[in-house]
Image (tube, rainbow, N blue to C red):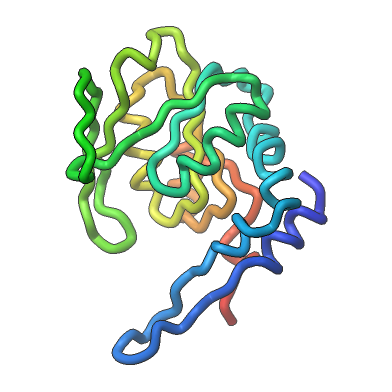
Length: 181
């Protein structure tokens, strides 16, 4: 990945203060989606993190994964499969594979599912998402796809190093790159 894309990602990102009673900052990634140069570069840059591993399909969780996953799949010349959250307002009227996602950074437990017919036994699955803070979604999707899992490509990884290594998370930026201080 070139330094220009990294600089653009850092420049288009903001921390926002939601105001009282909150005592924390909220990440605002909307600038990433607004910048056409970032959108043009994200697919190839994230794909490049795992190209040598020869993925055959990209799986991404909703919501921002539905934006990034197709960009990466296109850059790799492979297909894309959506991972839906259980309890969403849409019914999926076909067999699904579900996995529990361990508690995320908010402490919420979720379930992610993919359409069973869209994953072949011999697929090599690359998980793609925008941000990894605890690794919970990557861990849940690794459980869901089993030994087909290659790893997870993200824009930003702020997981503890042991989690990053365990889940084979590769990123364009680390947590220090967007430090609010």
